[in-house]
Amino acid sequence: MTRLLKPPSVIHARLPASLLRLLSVAALFALVVFAIQYSSFTGSLHSHFALIHFINLAPFLPHSHMFQLKMINPFPLSAGHTIDPQTAMVHLNPSLQEQISILSDFQSSLQQCVANRGLGLTAHIIDHCKLVLKFPPGTNSTWYNAQFKIYEPLEYNYDVCEAILLWEQYRNMTTVLTREYLDARPDGWLDYAAKRIAQLGADKCYNRTLCEEHLNLLLPEKPPFHPRQFQTCAVVGNSGDLLKTEFGKEIDSHDAVIRDNEAPVNEKYARYVGLKRDFRLVVRGAARNMVTILNGSADEVLIIKSVTHRDFNNMIKRIPNPVYLFQGIVLRRGAKGTGMKSIELALSMCDTVDIYGFTVDPGYTEWTRYFSEPKKGHNPLQGRAYYQLLECLGVIRIHSPMRSERKQDWSDVPSREMIQKAHSAALRLKRSQSDQQERGGLGRFGSCKVWGHAGDYSNAGPISGSPDMSDVRKNSNYSKWEVMSFESLRKEARDHFQEMAGVSLYKMDGNKLDDLVCVKHELKSEA
Image (cartoon, rainbow, N blue to C red):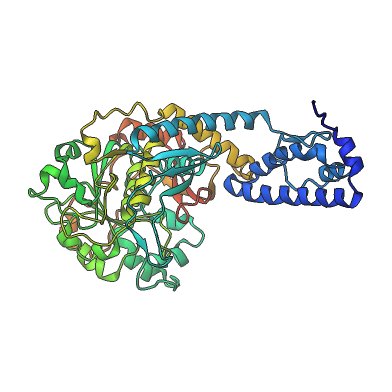
């Protein structure tokens, strides 16, 4: 015998009014909690989706309570969204629906890329922005976090929309501290400059002359390096796995090579890590040994990651090498490792970034270096997961012993066209939920918080240095980057400069997307 289901109106009639009210309140409370939790993923847009799910509960609530719910909708709608007054259904702006569809397709491509290249890692999609990278069951988790008394996890959550916005932004950034940045930033000389000098710390540069004495030797007038300056760059880490594969000639074939801290470059390790020396990013501790580290290469550029020290100036005067400060770190708050900052530096100058020696293969039980005994370091699993994400976002190309045997085919990585399309979609979604459309629109400068103005970029400004510069520095190639003519840059770099209308972009603090210092230079045509 078939049992007929009673319509919702019959169910309502048999339930006491007090119980109906209780059910209504409970359902509304559950919806609010669900929306708050869900919106933590990608912002207010998901709170709108939460309201859509509520329609499934509608038949079981009295119509009077449905009306009340519709009238007290707690979720602010983005521009172009509407609510159907009969169903409480949210109708998304068609343009945003298109962006979500683009990002969903990109997530699928990224998932396939991780499956093909992740050496056991898998990507599990949550929505159009969120995914989880998981290591297979049985993965040996050996790194122990003493603070939280746990071993490193086997799953890592990522916001792909935020990641693609951040790393594509680095392709247009300046990552060296300059005088024009300090001049443009409201607290540049008084507060920020002091934070980059070890002796001052929390104190301020009330005496600007004193601060300039500390910084003159490593503070160029304008950016010494440019986006798109090099076609290919190799970032060489310090991992012991470099000794398992002879990558030396391949590394040296790049237009520029970036190395970290004290990693030696000599004939002993040449077939593993190469001999080419262009840039070296160092922490303050390693900078104390800069004379020894830079020995044998008068042109290798030294970039100090955090702060300078008055003792450094005496050493800088003795060497011919250019020395600068990195721009774009979170000071005194557990900044990222040097390897990650080296990738940021590379991406700000190079079209293609290849990384070597970053411990990205399975099976590591300790942190090793190719030139010394094992030491405590970053947790390998977290690094492996993030580097794999970056490869499938088109940021880097990973080279390692377990990848060296296979053909270096990058066709399973999303194309630049697909990445740029996903970037545009993520940007539109982000700005549809903020005031950025009013502040700066969707153009390249929508994230500019502070603007500054400089002179003609083609005119060489004062080079880094002080009046008591040693003869070693005066007669060296120290200033070659800072007096490089615009015409001598690679065509792609010149084209990018024109596309950016002569604007240099700097991070205000750390990796915040929306707080940029933007300095406008005069173009020859404008001058």
